[in-house]
Image (cartoon, rainbow over the protein chains, first blue to last red):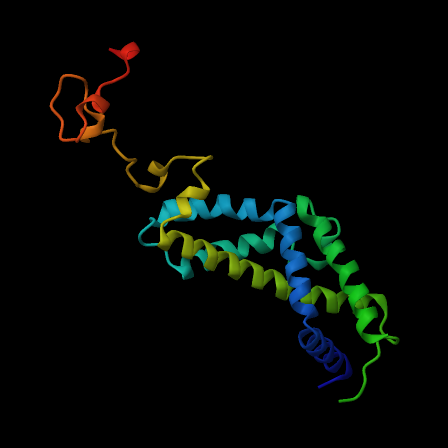
Length: 109
Length: 97
């Protein structure tokens, strides 16, 4: 395992051990709700359920349809474009990055 | 485990690490949302969340029928025989007769 990979693994482990990963997750979820990401996904869910039928929709159907949309809305997978993403949620990563840096400083400096 | 220090990490690497964690947490959130929705669908309260934006008919659920006036004894109209203990109570107030 090279040094970078070791560093990543160590950071992840520390975040989990201290419970900070969970806290970051809750912070991110609150931000996503606040900015309307969840509402966008709800609207899309409604379409999926209408198409598949209330009685027949499965978790797999929802995961297959909703997860890619959730990523696209946030510009995930196009890292260089996240900061300039045309979607309204482009500021989310900036917010997250600032919080993450504060956390790293607290845990590792 | 040796102590780690971020002192040697430049901003790009820090950003890359933050992005990995970010993507991971987004995936978690998406999955959690899917399970939430699925549970709401199977427990029967999913359409309640959308009542303001649509109708239950959108999901193939028939709305509750209007069955007309209540037929319980205490709700009987004046003059009709009822089964309640006090006939007087079954009459509508004078202003409605």
